[in-house]
Image 1: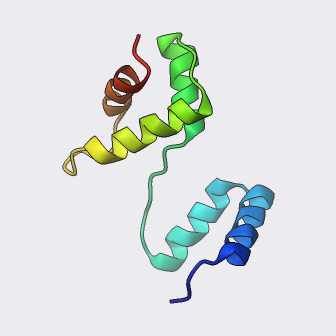
Image 2 (image 1 turned 30 degrees about the vertical axis):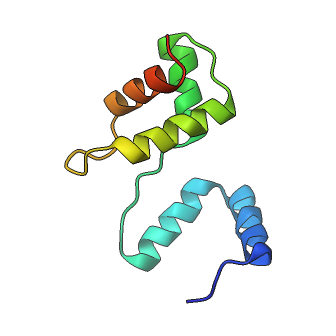
Length: 93
């Protein structure tokens, strides 16, 4: 497998920007015969603003996603409850 150097990463970024990340993930799932569930910074910010009624920066949202990845239970995966706990740990109430 080839490494993803800066040029290839830039090209991937352009493709995602042009087609949308959902379409790219759908294509990857088809090619690799797998499935993926992606949580984004936008998911965290939406939760914070519309459900928890707290402000959240993109950096904080990324920290929440990292905390979710580091603390998830492989039997249940990434869940909204896990996000709530991660938001409370990273941003507080």
